Amino acid sequence: MMAEFNVGSVLVTGSNRGIGLGLVKQFLQLPNPPEWIFATTRELDGPQSKELIELALKCPNLVVLQLDVTDPNSIKAAAQRVEEHVQEHGLNLLINNAGIARMTTMEDENAETMAIIYATNTVGPLLVSQEFLPLLKKAAQQSTQTGLSCSKAAIVNMSSLSSSLEQLPLWELWKFPSYRCSKVALNMITRCQSLEYKDYGILSTPIHPGWVKTRMGTEKAPQTVEETTQAILKMLSMLSEKENGSFVGWNGQIYPW
Image (cartoon, rainbow, N blue to C red; front, side, top):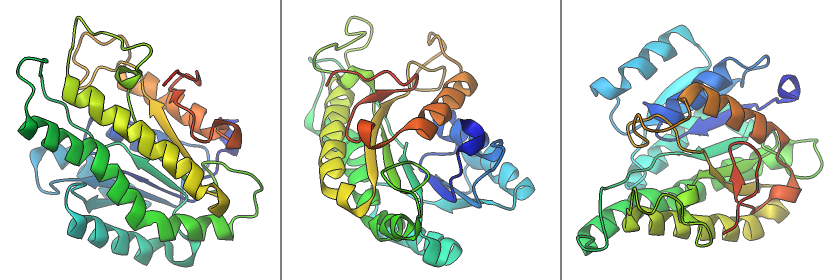
C-alpha cells in the first residue's frame, strides 16, 4: 500500500525535532516521495533546527520554513512561500503537529498556562488550517481521485489519547489538565473541519501518535520516533472518507472521544 501512497505535497508544522522531524524523514524515504515537503520550525537559526536545515541541504524537495503557529503574520508568510512552490497544484496534506505541554496539576493550573497551551495546541492548528484552506481546496479540485484521502487533500491534527474523556489514560502519572483540555478542543475543531470541508473534497482527522520517546514523551515511552512515524505514514496512506472526523491511532485503531 505504501508504494501507492503518492502525495504531491505535504506540510508538517513543528518539524525541527521529535515526531515532526520523524515524519519529514519518512516522507523523504517513500518509494515515491512528495514533490514538495514543507517542514516548519519556530526558529530557523536556533540549534534545535540544525538537523532539519542540514537535511534540506541534501534534499532538493525539502523546504524549511519559519512558522510560529501563534503568529497570524508568520502563518500567512509561510502560506505565501508554499504557494510559490506548489502554484496551481495546491497543497495535498497539512499535518498540524506543533504542540507544547506544561507539567501542571489541578492545584497549580492557571489562566496564563491555559492560554499559552491553547494558543499553540488548539488555536494554532485552527489558524494554520484556515490560512492553507485555499491551497487544500486547489489540490482537491486538481485531483482525479474520488472520495477522500491524504493523497488528494487532508488536514491531519496531532492529538493525544490523553484527550479521550472516556479513557483518560495515565492520569496518575501525568495530570496536565491544560494539555488534555487543549487536545479535547482540538478534537472538536477537527470534527467541525470534517463536517465543513468534506464537500470540498478535504479529509480531516485527529490522530493519536501513541506514547513516543521524544522530549515531551520522555524516555519512559515505549515507542521510538522511527517506528511510530513509519506506522503513522502507513495509517495515513489508508485513510478514506470512512475515517473522516474519526479519532484515529497511529496503528489505525479508532479511539473513543
